[in-house]
Length: 123
Image (tube, rainbow, N blue to C red; front, top):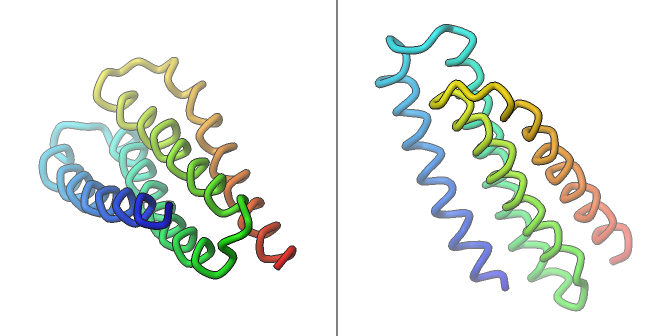
């Protein structure tokens, strides 16, 4: 399981850097300041939770008997897809309704962090 999260983290990290560069160089002249900030928020939270996935890899190695770190990892993956993905789609399509989906990804991030805390507490 730790190998899967390491691969996902590495790919997400590469994608975060690529999307950040895309936003800074290709979108800056094409988007309003508000939409550019929205895109940058998606990139920033994706990268933060890419690092969280690396913490999951460490937690799995440290507490292999606990099922909490893998669940936290999948919550971080879901959060990246839903939170950051909805922001990227909102910016690219103009579909404002996607803003209503974004908090679901945020809730997944929060739940993931709480599960990591619980795994550490129980160790």
